[in-house]
Length: 399
Image (tube, rainbow, N blue to C red; front, side, top):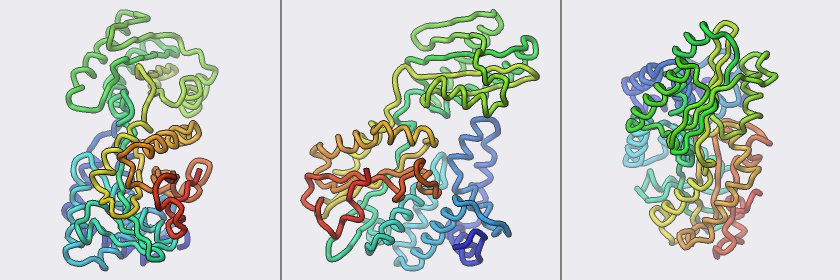
């Protein structure tokens, strides 16, 4: 595939959207675009990057495509090609899965992860059968190579499940307080830093609307009363001058310096007005446990979705991570540690390997940010098929 759009891929995207239906697709894109602006709107657009990219490519652009666009187009082509091969029942299951992926906060990431996993395994020499779609099996894919078979379960875990302080909730708070900060900075020009520690966390759910409102009021109260601190069991707030040297830089440089100062787990928001800058830096009361959340999901998946009749592979997609967090999870061996911890549990008895991937791998990023082989693999050495040569391309540990 060259860097420019080709009619074949354009036709594949149109065929994929045809499976969705014109009315459903138009309504979905309109709903995503109506989610608002600001930081919260940016989070929504990032979550639905596949849908928005497909819409951009619906009328094929006469320009070179980015690596991410080429990857999305290739997976879309794989979906439409498989749809033609599926039985009528399998095609209806695919249509139903597409429809479910376009409702509420769901997205196409799960289906794209499924088909990308199939593409990886076919490139490694496996025959791939879409058992979940074609046969209604509890697992998603059946791999076959040299008369050896393996079951694959594809699943998506949001990194938010391992955070007490959700990014979406923090950005909702930042959007809510932003007009107050604009007004306050106009009257109090300068550079300020509000450090927030939230021992009980803050999650993105309707139940937390009241909590967001109370935090908003407390910050407004600090600003109006020129208070430097406010604390109770739910939040510790401290307002200080911003002393970073990068405060003279533009917002991108400032955020980079703040990230180095506060670490990858802090949530950051910058409000600028005139010559004034107000930074909010928030952390939960304890460290994130993203890899722990992945382990817990695998422990629930293995007994529920693998038959136990064949070696099983859990293909995990970790969503809602950025480049720095993803690298940190790997470099600190958190993913490897929790995967290997899981593989010692009774629930992992049918699992021959665990694989992990993120958007960086799906969208064609390269090492050191992404896995060089498209995923990170951890083999279960105690499984009887762990050393089977036919399965090796899919199960041999990559780290």
